[in-house]
Length: 288
Image (cartoon, rainbow, N blue to C red; front, top):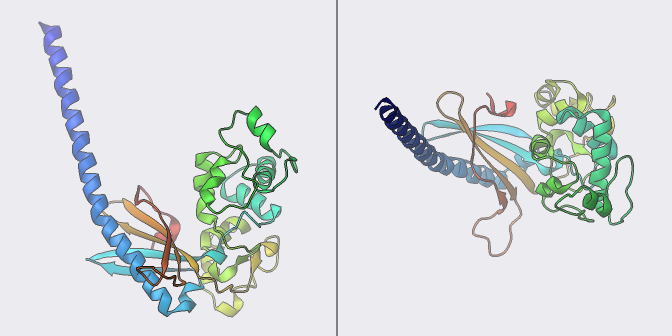
């Protein structure tokens, strides 16, 4: 009799837990739908403003938009302020892999060689630890080198040795702009900090007068990574984020081309729009 009571108790407990989990999922989905509407509105309002003020579109900034009694933070990053793996120097990629992703010097050299081989048109492994199709097949890797420039940065996940976790770490620092150097005014503080190894330097640079910003970056070991010039491009990354109860953040990311194209419903072009994500903590840039 006791075993029957115990069994029934376990069934009841399991059922109650399942109901709680389903209720939590429903609540999360409803919250996502409500937040997503606000994040999309913030992205559209910001894109509209950038069309009328191109000076804002050419510099990194973090702006607060009050919507429906909540603060939505929108990070504006021109593409020229990010690392383009298609054309970046080996030294820049190695530094990014070491300081942002935490790889050792040797691991960074190998991964840089493999990125180069993934992109270049030849079939000969280059550098230390390079890999072309034979090495991919030998490793049982599910993809082959692209042998061409990337149009979609997420394809970096297909590089031999690139893990999903590693890609998620470096992805916020990447963009496609055709530039070997990073524009100082357009660079996010976190990228400046990572490449220079000086925490807080990026924020200090962006808080300094425009005419003095290049001084700290155009000298020293990271000088070859940065450029004082503004490219005046039309592509920007917009990250909208808002905080709800506790430390729960929601974020939505979009790439927007501010040049008008025939047939568009808006005066800008939405290149990509990522799914809304819930985060337990938010990136440093979004914290006021």
